Image (cartoon, rainbow, N blue to C red; front, top):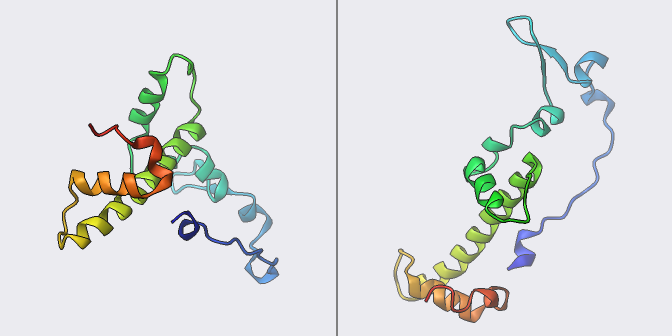
Length: 131
């Protein structure tokens, strides 16, 4: 299952025809109201992670801070934890769906999650947690 989630990364060659002017390539853009704004990859790294995540980042951060060993949590770390959680939930849900479909059902039930946890070694750490 983990192999299905990995996608190979292919190198991209430099294409001069796709390049834009010096000012535009540096991310210096001006909004309609005349104020400078940033665009491109730098803008994505500047805190727009919330639209890339399906989980509420403020709640993830609050949960992270309940750990006594965590005093501060950067935006990047909160985003990575949220994405990892999304991928984990997606993976276990897909595996549990297989068991629901074997029972000719479309709705996941607790027993489907139990079956997925028992059958798949990666979920061994979850055994007994749904009791």
